[in-house]
Image (cartoon, rainbow, N blue to C red):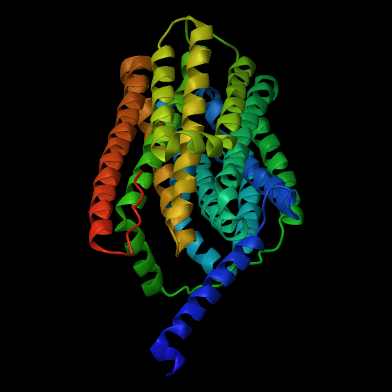
Length: 441
């Protein structure tokens, strides 16, 4: 009897496939292994440069408003244009990374972004400044999706949440340092010199990133054909779990974008009336985000993905409510809770996207990043408009609605997961092969 008729070849193929999969996993980077520290530090620096450039004008909005004689909602476009440009171009950039490689696209993106960043201080009008910021955001679009796809391919699955958490931690450090540095520099020399300093720092980060990041070992070039890209995108958008994760990322970022776009205006007004340098130092609370993002893996291990998202949403909501106080210490505590909740929720959702997508990871991550930065643009604009019409309470109201959306989606995901588990349980009784429950948000 032939091997085919006995099923021997099928068994041997399955064993070979499992062995190959285990071998590929073993060859990937892991904490303590060769190249892991270099990779982590390189992507950490990329995150620093990305967020420092992307939000370089956010802490300076009151000064930009004064210089150009515009309202808070108009000045906020210097932030919304950058995040909007990133949101629009992140998917095309992810397609380029599938064809030309993650490291190549990330390097080119940083090179263009830092070059534009050196032109930003010389913008003669608000319109030109907004255009330059949009170009900068579009250039930076090559970083987020390519970085998470690089990690998904080069890092062992068990270490993926931690690795992405470190990248997100770099984002928080970049956002913090950019705002703190610009605050103190602007107090002495104005906002133009401040954004120029950030540009110079980003150049140094970009050079170090390229020198440190290990060459990819598991990248397989894909196709640039629009039909293939469209098919991949449709597949991701038809996945209910991925869509819920995209919405959660957008809503978390709506809160964060609104709060940190407007907080500078609030703190310059009574009863606080803080100088620009002190307002910039407020962003030191980003250090809390660094910790919460880097520990997201342990949080998921203890509470599960949905439990971690509930905790992140609850923490963010508590921070929003505390920030309504007229006491500066309570406002600061509120910002700490908002920052911790946001970065934890972002790290959990973005790592879940990378784990859920088994093919077209760059596109899956790109769709998440697109939703995430659309949330940032929406939050910046809606938060500023709400502040203009209703003060800080209006901005907090926008944030609470977004958190309610996160909780609602997570509850829906919990119910969907339980229903799926019940279906799989019934299937297990009908089929000897059993079943594997599908994941929910």
